[in-house]
Amino acid sequence: MHQLNVTRRSLGIRFSDKSDAEVTIWAPKATQVALNVHKSQAVLPLQKDELGYWHLTTDQIKPGDQYTFVLNGDEEYPDPASLSQPQGVEGPSRAVDTAAYYWEDQSWINPSLDSYLIYEIHTGSFTEAGTFKALEAKLDYLKALGVTAIEIMPVSQFPDSRNWGYDGVYSFAVQHSYGGVQGLQHLVNTCHYKGLAVVLDVVYNHFGPEGNHMENFGPYLTDKYRTPWGKGINLDDNWCDGVRRHFIENALMWFRDFHIDALRLDAVHALMDFGPVHLLQELRQKVDELMQVTGRQHYLFVECDLNDPRYLKPLSEQGYGMDAQWIDEFHHALRVAVGEEKTGYYADFDGLNHLAKSYKDAFVYDGQFSVVRQKLFGQKVSGNAGQQFIVFSQNHDQIGNRKKGERSSQLYSYEMLKLMAGAVLVSPFIPLLFMGEEWGETNPFFYFVNHTEPELAEAVRQGRKEEFATDDDDDDDVPDPQTKETFEQTKLQWQLPAQEPHRTLLRYYQTLIALRHQLPALHHLDRDQLDVVADTDKEFLTVRRWYEDQYVLCLMNFSKQPQSTTLSVSGEDICWEKLLDSADTQWQPNAPAASSECPVLLKNGDTILLQPESFILYAQHHEKSRFHLPDPIPQRLYVS
Image 1 (cartoon, helix red, strand yellow):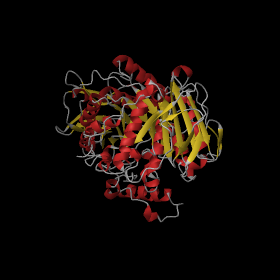
Image 2 (cartoon, helix red, strand yellow):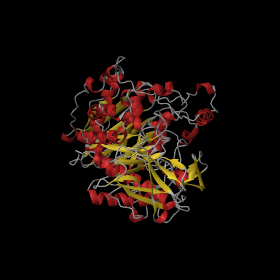
Image 3 (cartoon, helix red, strand yellow):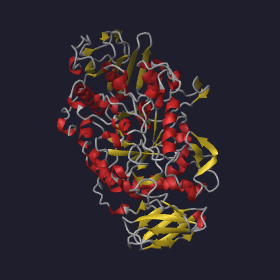
Image 4 (spheres, rainbow, N blue to C red):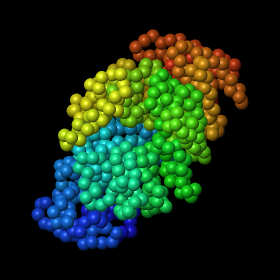
């Protein structure tokens, strides 16, 4: 049985067509393994198989039954491959038949990557109820906004009900408080019905600390490597094959049994693997096998801090074959350009010059000396299309890892919010929005957990204070990640989009997104068909993009003063039509609009005066640049 079959899950408990249960557990350390079915109090011994696996075929456990595994006759633990933990991480596992769900998405086709516009969601704080069902009620709103894919932060079972999701222990179990297995399946089915792809954030670089009994079953961790979370995941040490299989089967399960369209793999730079085939390469191979069998398209996204092109290179070029990568450096350069203090990792970025470089090269550091890292860092990435890079002006990490969890709306002016949105949405990359940014949500997004072990809770609390110990502020200013109040303050305020200035900002985002979808020069992500010029004296950035005979011109004034520029574009002298100006009256809900003095039609030699912290988009004046503004989002779609 040790041969991995991409068409079915083997780990844990799987129900066959004959109503028997196939039980498989990897426990190379154990001398005895038995299944304890709680309802019948039956203790059923498993037979030892090859490579540390134990196996049993039985009709004595049914879907819905709770169970545990008994090791060596007296140690009893939940299933490491459990699909459901209704009583939390320390409770018994519950058997689930994932094949029982009736899917209605047979006609669903995963969009091409260049069509992705991602909206990142934390299920617990996205709505008041914090469930998959409540999230479903907002899908029509997201569709009207122009989103094409939602990215759900990790849902693997974590302690209690308040957590970012990166403290999950049971990789296969769907968080019970969110709605469990059936709740997630129903959400994905509904998303596909409404034309939305689903990206799921998964964590393969560590296990959470509470309820972690993995080491009692096998050497899932190794002292060979250290990570920010302690021991490294055992991917290349003794008995590593069972660990690798655990994660590969997990990824295949999300694609096959939950119809997830893409996985976002957290912090893959912490996957220490020096074996002949890296875990990501093996994962790519198995996902490709699955796609050949099912005919469905699935993507693999990574968060990586190495600026290493190897992650994106195909297997045929000895790369890891990942489909796309988050680009934090675009975020860092943009934040410094809008005035972020150059401390911490921002110290490596100079603002506009580095933002211009990221537009062109994706990686800002591709061989230069990094002051923060104190070494030459990165390698140039070439031959990779724009859809292999994901950019943003904020995300869960960049907000929540601040001391006070401030969103952009708490840090920058209303005008700057519009400029930042423009900078992301005209990039030649996949844009990602963080939930609520489109209306300027004012609630922070704090780091929060709810560990039930007092010593662990206190360690997390103190660790958070120590992280910001160099700040001038008092440690008491650090929000306590353990309290319910901290969590409640992070929830979105769905009444805000009906109020000003949030309503106007939402309409602005909707318009920008529609422009991106409709203009060929914006939605074709060719990194080579782009010019960018930074004027650091004026704090002014000019981006020009084109596709075939359609051109767009993006002008960005990051200065707090009006700035003028003279249009000088090489090539055919064709008039440009203004499609959007963030300083126009329609985007100024609470103040008299400044006179932008920007001509509606523009040609070479004309002078343009941009208002402070403003963004203007021009397109060539021909049929392809005609823009159809979508209807405003009905209030009924977001206000309960």
